[in-house]
Each structure stands twice: as structure tokens, then as C-alpha cells.
Length: 263
Ligand code: CIR
Image (cartoon, rainbow, N blue to C red):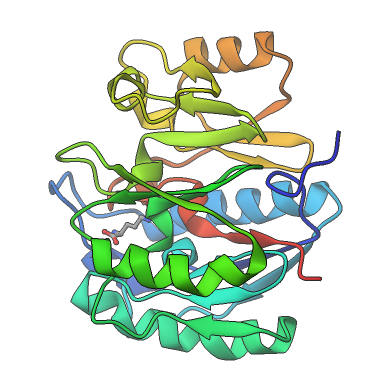
């Protein structure tokens, strides 16, 4: 069945900038290799396009090292787009820079004005609700403002907790279909997915919890064979995409696109 939480006509990505070497990261494991990152990014965009979607690739922004991670700048629903208010000070300007692109694609664009903060990486939209994980980047006030913005459109927002030491809620989970979640066992143990079907990442493979369902594909980072086999066994069509370089600056596959079907 086609579901609005997994099937999209559009996506927005942004070409990585050379400044990615200065991207935010929790632990320094070395700088991303720019040429390899560009190859991975091209594979990623091609995979999205292979599903028939229209993918807009915005130009690199050298002034924002993390700007390739466009997911954090906005929440794109069917009826409206909402410009986020990133909790990382170096990323605040990225959200404003995304607004003109959203204005061109949506007739209704709202903006989280603050004082709270919220980043798209902390938001998982399922078929029935919007889950938002509080984190170092997303505050209760930010969630409250989002909930007020989306309530008139019939969306309910549920606040959950991103595990300690984890950057974003979706660092540890992804939606596979409207009611099925891929999650690390640690996040699932919090009980936040009660009522959903949950597939756990395999031991030592938690880094692939950030995958994305996009139309008929599940894009999963290369190098996590046991989890890939589990997701395939559940009937999903998994496409591997290299993500070693983005991962050095805590970026997963979901971070590199906004996925939506504007009405
Ligand atoms: C950051 O720390 O903001 C970036 N280096 C990584 C952002 C990853 N975005 C995401 O998980 N949605």
C-alpha cells in the first residue's frame, strides 16, 4: 500500500562543501575524504532518483560545514513545510538558507521562531503520529512550538527521549513502513515504539539504524550485512549506499535529504 510516510514525489539534497572537514562531531576520527564523500552523495541522489522522484540538488555552501545535512533544517509534511531552529549555533543559518527553496515548492511554509530549538534529525514521521526525541539539539519548547504549528492539520506530536550520547533520535531508528521501525535495541528498550513492529539492528551494527525508506527502496549504509539480511527477510528492498565519510561527522543517510510530496 502506498503510504504518505514512506512514498514521496520529491526530495531536496545539497552538494557537500569542502568545509565538511570542519563539520561538527562528537569524536574526532579524522576528516572526511571529500572526493569519496562526493561519490557517495552522487550514489545517494541517483538512488532517490531511481524511484522516479524529482530530486533538487542545491549548491554547496562553504560558509556552513554541516549544510549537506539538510534534514535538520526543515520538516516537510504534505500540507506544509516547517523551517526548524537548529540547536547547534553554527547551524542556525542553514535553516534560514533553506526557506526560499521551500517557499518555491510549498504554498504554506511555517517557521519555528524560538525560544526553543528543534532539528529535523530528531523527528520521525510515521503514518499515525510525529515522534520527536528530546536531545542536545531539540528542547521541549521547540517541540511545543512544532506541535502548535501542526495541530491544525490533524498531526499529533509525541515527545520521546533520544538516548544519552546519541546525536539525534533518528541516529538510532528509521521508519521502514508506516508501522514498522528499524531501531537499535537500546532505543527500543525505552518503550517508545510500543504498538509498532520493530526490527532490531544486529549486534555491533547500530550505526545502520539510520537508514531511509524512500518509495520502494530502503537505503542502508554499506557494511552492515546481518541487519541488511534481517530487513530483506521482512520483505524490504534494500539498496546499500557508502556512508563512511559522512559518518566521520556523525551524518547518516536520512540527514542528506528532505523527502516529501507537497500537495
Ligand atoms: C551535526 O553534528 O549537526 C552534523 N555533523 C551531523 C548532522 C547529522 N544529521 C542528522 O542526523 N539528521
